[in-house]
Length: 491
Image (cartoon, rainbow, N blue to C red):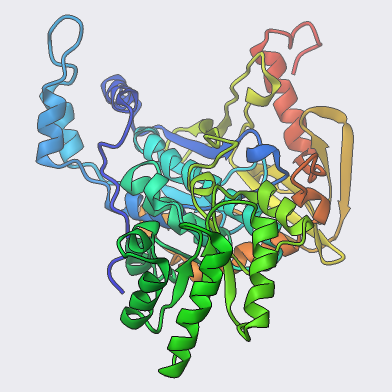
C-alpha cells in the first residue's frame, strides 16, 4: 500500500502560536515544562457520545515537524505595527533547528469519548507544546466529528452497509480525504473516494451517474452498454427518467448479463419517495427472479432520514450517504480545546494551573490528567478524570463537575486507563494501529454503551466525573483565582 501518512505542514498554524513561542524564547521561559490537554466541551449533534479519531495523523505531524528555509524566509518578512520585523534573526535560527521532543499520551482511535475528557496529553517544553496546538486540534476536531457522525448514521442503518459518497461535497481536498478516513473508522463499509482507497486501504465502490444514461438515446441502451463494459460491476442508477421503468430496464440488462455468466449486483435510487419506490422495486425484482439484487439508496441521507425510512419498512439494502456525513450537518465543528493544566521547572514538581470563566463549561481541569473507564455487567459504567499525582485506588468516588452533590462510587470494578503512551521525548513508543483495527475498536466500544446513550433524541447522559481529590483541588484553585480563599478561611 502507498504511504498512508498525511503530511501536515508546520506552517498550518495560527500566527499567535509563533508569536507566543517567540515571547517564551525572549523571556527565557521556553524550557519551562508544561502539560496541555486536548478535550471538547459538548457532544456533537446533540448526541450522547463521540468517537475519537485522527491520532495517526497527529503522530505523523509531530514526528516530522520541521521549519524549512522557505518557512523561515516567510516569517522573516512579517512586520509589526512599527514596520520592523516581528522576529529577530536569532529566533528564526532557533526555528530552523526545531525538533519536537515532548511526551504524548492519547486515547486510541475508535474509542468512545465524552466532554471534558482529555483525548491527547502533551507534556514537555512549553514552547514546543504551544507551537503544535493549532494543527493538533485541526486534525482531532474534524476527524472525531466525522467519525461520530458516521457512527450515528451506521447505527440508524441497523447493520446494513453504509457507503460514504461525500467527496464532491466535502470541504476541500483534504477535508474529503480526512472525512473518508474518519467515516470508515466510524463504521462505514466503504467510500467512493479512490484516493482514500489507495492511501488507507478503504474498500471503494460506485455505480454510474445520470450523465451516463443521458448520453444514450434510451435508458435501456445505456444499461446494456454499461453491462457490456463493466460486467463485474453492474449496478444501475434507475431514476434518471421513470424509476420503476428503470428497474425493469435493469432487469433486462441483468438477464443479458446472466447469459454471459455474470450477475447484476444492484440498482440505485437517488430521488423520490425512497420508502415506497424501494418496496415496489423489491417486488418487481423478486417477481423477475432477481431476489439477490441489492437496492442501493442515496439522496441527502442522514441518521434521522435513515431511521425514518427503516420505520416505514423501506426495502433498502445499502445506504449511500454523502453531503450530510462529510460536512457534519447538525454540528459544524466539534469545539475541541487545548488547555494548559500544569507547569514545572525541569526536574521539579508539577504546579497545577486552572482557567476560570463565567461559563462553567469553560473552567478547566488542573494537573496532569488521566481518564479511568469502569465496566460493569458488560457495559461501560462511567469515566473518572483524575490527577496522576493523586492516582486513586480501586475504591474511589467521582463528582459531577457541574453539580457537586451528584457523586458515583466505584468499588473495585474492572477498569482501564484511556490515555496511553504514544511518544516519549518525541520518539514513537507505540505503533498506531491500522485503520481496520481502529474501525473494529469503534464498533466494539459502541457495543459497550448503554442503548440510551446512543439515542438520537434526548440521549441518556453517560456518567463522567472528577475524582474526589481532584474535585477538591479544582474547587480550591477556583476560589483562589476569584479571590475568595481568604473569605472562605484559606485554601
